[in-house]
Amino acid sequence: MNRGRVNSHDGTDGRWRQLTWWILILPLLMGVAVVTQNLYLLDYSHVLAGMLWTGADLFLGFILGPVLRRITPEERRALVRYLVPKTLLYMPTVAFTSVVGGWFLAHAFGFLSPGSPDLAWVGVAIGVSVVLVVQGAAISWNEWRIAGELKRREPDAARIQRSNTVVFRLAAVQGSLQVLIVLIMAHLTVG
Image 1 (cartoon, rainbow, N blue to C red):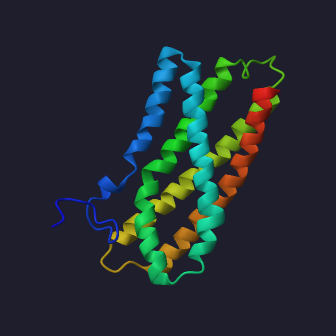
Image 2: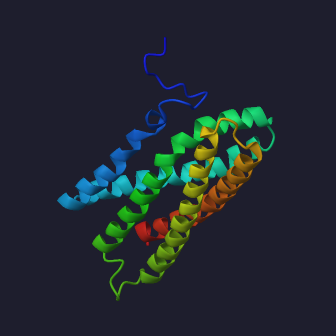
Image 3: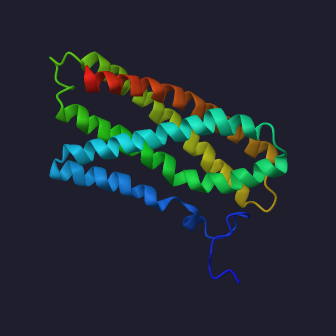
């Protein structure tokens, strides 16, 4: 008896329940931090979101991507069917919280002031963040395409594989760029 539980292996019911709803705590914390002007909470939500975003991208791009190329199409399809719904809410939420929280922190610490000695570093971070957001949109678009294809009675495995390849390659690039962002954040933190 299923009792309304999600059957995460076949991906046919309870799609909304498969989303990682707990991740919405991060933008909520960030919003509370901005409204109450609590820099500790703002920094916490920003750093945690950035850590989760970077870790997920590095894992997807450099660990899971190569593994997917070496497993059977049936195994790949099962893994993707389970993984995609988990990332549809997770990835945009951690990206949003990290980027927006970083903007508020840069403003709070005066890094955006015209006379700031760190303005060039922040400019590079903003530029990289814009690239990350554009890539994130491309990743999300492909994940939605995969999710739509998986809903079909007979999903097109080749189309899913092509979209997945784009997702994992972009995730690898994103993870690499996020390492650059971490370098910039370390510089801004200790000078």
